[in-house]
Picture 1: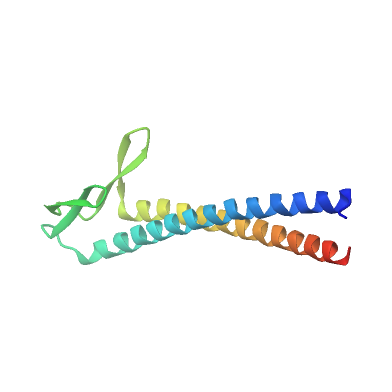
Picture 2: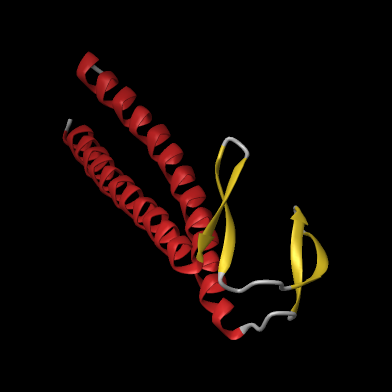
Length: 132
C-alpha cells in the first residue's frame, strides 16, 4: 500500500513532468525564433551582393509578397517598438540583431539547464519509489 511519502513523490513527479512539457514547448518556440533571427542575419549579409534597382520580393503579410525594386542598400528601416520605425545602417541593424540572437541563445541555455535539473530530480524520485 502506498504511504504518504510515496504519494508526495508521485505528485512531485507529475508536477515535474508537466513543467518539463511546458519548458519543451518554450524551447521549440525559441528554436523557431532563433531560426528567424538567423535568417535575418543571413539576409543582412546578402545585402552586400545586391545592387540598387535589384528586383526582390517584399513581404507584406503572412506568406504574402509583392515584387519591388531596391532603392537603397546602405540604410534600413527598423521597428523599435510601439509602431515606431527608425532608419539604421546595415551595421547598426546587424549589431541589434546580434544582441537579440545572444539574448535568445542565453535564455535557451538557461532553459536547457532547468530541464536537465528537472530531469535529474525526476530520475531521483523514480529511483526512490522503486526502492520502496
